[in-house]
Each structure stands twice: as structure tokens, then as C-alpha cells.
Length: 106
Image (cartoon, rainbow, N blue to C red; front, side, top):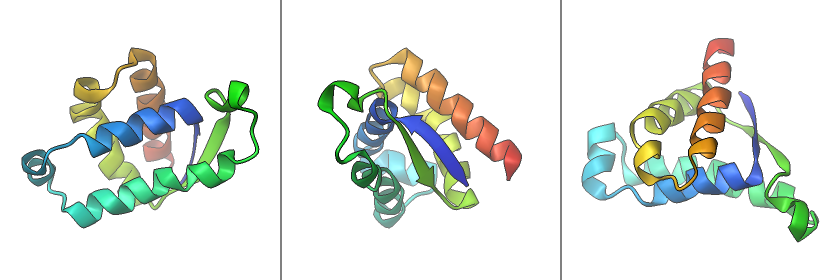
């Protein structure tokens, strides 16, 4: 699935993933390897952002290519954990909107 998010929203989501303690990973049904794989999707966005002027970077739309199963996992995470960890309510809404649209396409 192709997702398009602003670079700042991707980083907000990645930081939320990093903040999940081990017991919460278990509650999500995830392993550390699952989280690493999901983070790798977001880290790949850094390559797409290279060369973008710093003053435009945050709003730059970045395309992510994820398997449907990871879209589903991230959607569940975004609903359950992102509101606890994200510092930007707008980012939560934008991420959920993109994930919901991707989930309906799959």
C-alpha cells in the first residue's frame, strides 16, 4: 500500500513507536522485530527527504510503501497508542485519515 504523509507526521509517528515500552508491545501482540520492521518503513522516508530544503522539510509529502498487514498494524497502533504519545493532535488526525483510506483500499 502506498501512503503519503508529511515528513513531520512520519517523524511524529516514528517517535511514538519508539516510545512504546516492552509491556505495551506485548499488549499490541508485537515483538521487537515487528516494531523494528515498522520503524524501518518510516526511516526509509529519510532517503526520500534528502535534498529538501530544511525550511520545507516538515510539510514535504513523503510516499511510503507498506504491505497491507503493516498498514493494519499501524492503524491499530495509531488508534490505541498514538493519542498517548503524539505531541500534535493534527498529526494524529492526518495519520489516521491516511491509514483509514489505505485500509479501505486494501
